[in-house]
Image (cartoon, rainbow, N blue to C red):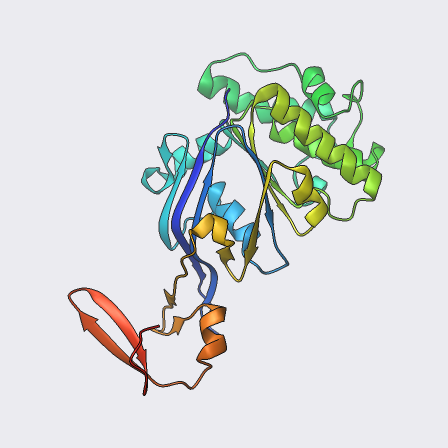
Length: 280
């Protein structure tokens, strides 16, 4: 199938905990064109894996809107999201072993991934050997996970991720712990899938080299994407205990302990630092 577009509008995600709420995403705006390859680049804890989990429907956002193709994810039931993820959206989790059954051959793993999609969509899917060819593993269908090098294991995980012919492929840290050769093989496989299938591909990574190989790279830090993705805007998130987490650049000018006056007029809230006339 053709690539699916992705649109995130002011997406917020808060993890609830007894020790206090943690804002993982704070107003993410991001648009991805059909057939585009995009890297979400950021350090650990930046929110990139949370964002890809939301795109996959593994979690629901605390606020905001996510559209994948013609689907408004917020309007789908859990069952509908599960069917979407098993057919039109492919997901490759971090670590090859989380994506394959270790005791089954690559052929068997691919066929298991295809089973529900063939029934749900009623279409003929690619032969497992053709899928393995796409990711650079020709003739490896009878092998199991333990028989492969780390780079080949990750490409086998990609094969399972594209087994159903998805329009969107979400890949979490596919090159972590790989040497340069293994990394390049994985990136070559992603490029081949995109070229031959026009699949939209989103890759989460902390490696700038990976970002350079894909069509576009967007940085994500402290739950916010770079200015390209958010049109220069910043957002403050109200946590469950009523506290407001301000953007880091604002905290640089107004550190914790600063007194603000809160004005609520006609549905708009303005924070005025004590002794200042301008709003934050």
